[in-house]
Length: 353
Figure (cartoon, rainbow, N blue to C red):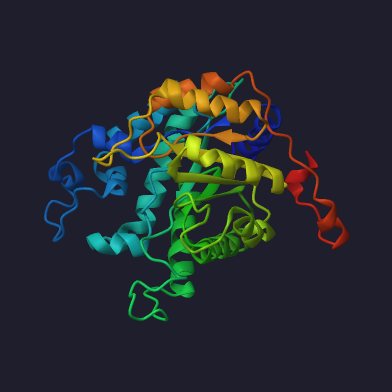
């Protein structure tokens, strides 16, 4: 199936039901108990940096494990697989001395997800690949030095360059959408969205863009200070295919913010919360059944268009969530609010469903 046909299939599916995003990639990789040798493989056996923990690298050194994880999530009920590229950018990979392979990392990660998506697609149900674009390990809005508030260790242009390289690789590898996720700094997200727009202009076609921010604690704000409403207003000009929230909080804690987003956004709303809050050891204890019960209420209340899981979630969680929402209706996309229509702003394409 061509990319154009897959995007058409995605649009049709999104108009009929709540779509299921996959769960945590890092949690599943940790279950494999990979060694330094696993991460290195033959290709990086003599590399001068420790590589254990560089999860993105297994697209090149243990592709069998990556394909297995994608397959397990699709079998569990996921419609959309996120690529294993959360840190597959030049800025994050500098910690491992692997800046030179970033383009290849993204191409291969997307290609492996594409292989499993195609293998498990049927005439009745197409499976999709979302190219995951993480926030990097630096922030453009805040100083890392408490003694120098004006200092920045990354510039907007450097972020744009890194995101451009990543987006190109994900598209080349076969992604159906690009997912700018786990956004803790809105300025970083703006750099990613600017880069994506430039890539689309250069390539002459566009993919749907999904955006997902992170409410860092019960203050209801991103780390860079924006409330849910301010975050939406900061990115809505890009006309995203969806807007959502993920990570940091469990479903119970995230619910009020998803509710707020569903009331103000005139596009699809997504959520992929953690499996509860972390325990004393940094693990996640919320069972699939309990999490699915909470998510089921989200759906019953008409808050969702796409739902998945973040830290601590597994195929068992995704299966339980898929079962909990399968009879629930998707959230209708509201028309542009009256106050915006009066201001002369045009409704987004997504609102024309």
